[in-house]
Amino acid sequence: MASAILTENEKACCTLLADLFLDAELTSSDFDRISKRLHEIGMPLKEAYHLVYYELFPILCWNLISPFNSEALLFDPNWVRAKVAQRCASPRWMNSAIQMMEWACFSSTIAPQWKKIDVRYD
View 1 (spheres, rainbow, N blue to C red):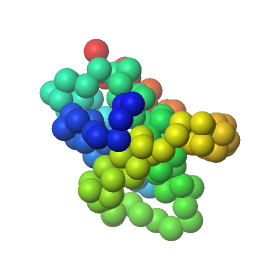
View 2 (cartoon, helix red, strand yellow):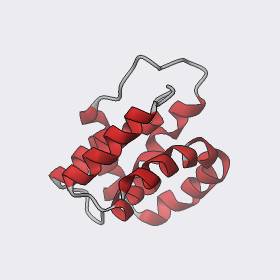
View 3 (cartoon, helix red, strand yellow):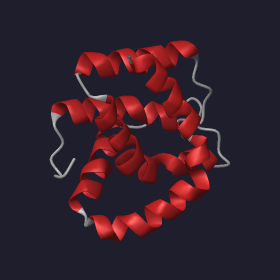
View 4 (cartoon, rainbow, N blue to C red):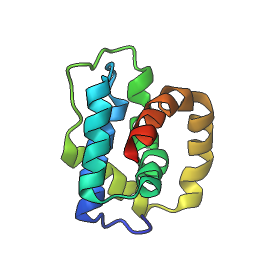
């Protein structure tokens, strides 16, 4: 993920992993579906985690703490992909300080979700 040009697999993963940030209770079958799809796409778990932590979390974490219920909403895949490409194109040093603060404050909202993907991936 060093470039602003996302591969087709990275685009598919961004759309898929954005589900982790919906303000909705994901079911066991949701985690099975996400894990299975990651396998089908051929995305190594380490790369998928990189997308979650470095690219998606800073963009979508605010949805998890929003007072508005977005349970019925899905993220527009084109919007997610454009935002990720924009982050990839910006200097990492600019994003890192803000991202560390966001992660420190809000990672507890996504870490349990990621663990459920991680255990199903193998």
